[in-house]
Image 1 (cartoon, rainbow, N blue to C red):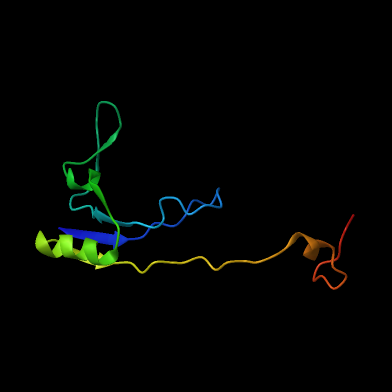
Image 2: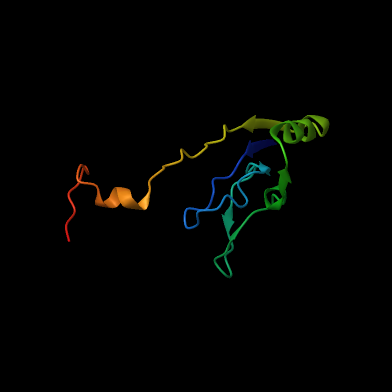
Length: 101
């Protein structure tokens, strides 16, 4: 049983940083998923994949995994680079792309 510790990326549809500051521990799939013959749903006998734990820091997530004897791997956090642009820059004469109105 292995787990993955990562920090989720912010939502692409919003400019805020909600739910992207906490570290998440999720268990990797240990058994393959099957297709239910009656309904066609995908099922699995592994219930650990339903558990998603959130932590305030990477150290807390690693400490939890070590305390409970869970093998884990850490994915590095991808921080977005801020793109600074002001509204008047849209009308500058030395723009890379010309104004088309």
